Length: 330
Image 1 (cartoon, rainbow, N blue to C red):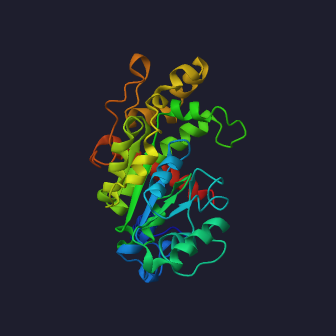
Image 2: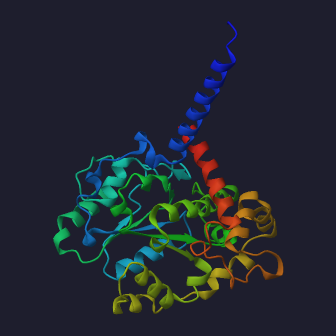
């Protein structure tokens, strides 16, 4: 090839730099990309009466119990609507736009957007929309990729309340120990999922706003169920009902938070505490090791922690890396 002139080389370098910056911006901020844009019709059916509550979890952190608290309070619910579609196929899944449309609006959607049971429950809700006085509460077992919410119009995102559930990985493992056949029955996988779940918090806060995100740690709310119900209802602008207070009257189990101390073997505890993902997760979330391992009095509030805090910056960096791997594997 003939040698390029200095001027041509300079312009080529500038063009390459510009292209790189644009591609990086579009990739890291999918809301700016045509690949992630969504028709504004997503917002057409969303009113104050059709707002959603999204419970985000990775399994064995109290998500089913939390969903039941809403059900006992008279809220319509969707149980694992992505089961068999997104959930079970990966840790941090990319939710198709058609699934988001189904979950967050009452617009028509295809039969492949949600699983069959969830489609019927969602249709029942939409058919009685004019009579509904409470938002639809959705529970998922895999951490939804927050970038998917960028595709939703701002008015949709600001009318959705998110509840992110966390738990000590040693407690998660104790709860999972009897379920040998479950795909998640793996200490490395638990550690990976918990840290990925935590790493999504900075981006989720940026996308939907701090006021729409509640992070609830099992070790805190399991000690005060009535207080937990009050916190949940306050987050979704609801009120505590007598029916849910009666439901939790005999459900208190404060010892559940520390049962792992006697149930989990020393070898399993060591495997958890030396796992790199669990170490990072426990450090950021405030879970301790050693003599103070059951001291849960100073857990980190990942919503009130400034995004400029080095821990938040580290979470966002690791989240971006996880997305690079995720998208690259598609």
